[in-house]
Image (tube, rainbow, N blue to C red; front, side, top):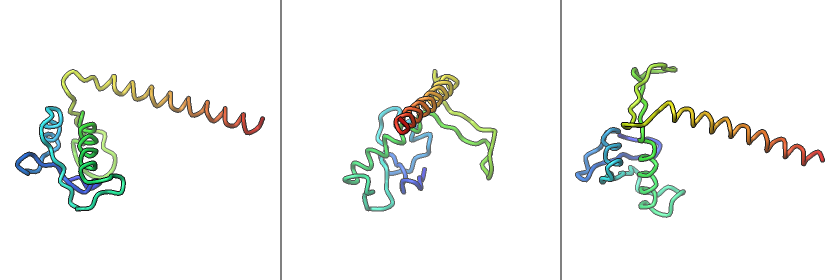
Amino acid sequence: MLDLTTNGYFVDEHKIPLSVFEMRKKFANDLPCDFIKLSPECSDDFENLEAEQLYTNKYFAKNLFYIIAEKENGFGDRESHLTFLPIGFNDMDRQNMNYNFRLKSVENARKLKIITMTKLFS
């Protein structure tokens, strides 16, 4: 899988490029999955290429916990998609927790705004 945002792709121990599902399986089983960066320079956000690779591996491992893909790839919003979840993972619980987290974040932001405004005008 070529990732344009990180300017690279993942390979197995034989340097063969991996698909998203192969990457997920390797990360889940703690098997080698090396990131090949197309540019030899390290990003300004990291001290060296090794640190950047470690971060990239962790980032992708987190993001590949479950996979959502459009049934038909194209332009515009698509309602129909496929979701690939780990066995025993409840996506409805995840959605509910995410909703509650966002709701609480909005409530906390409103409280903070009220407190800040009160301090400004007192």
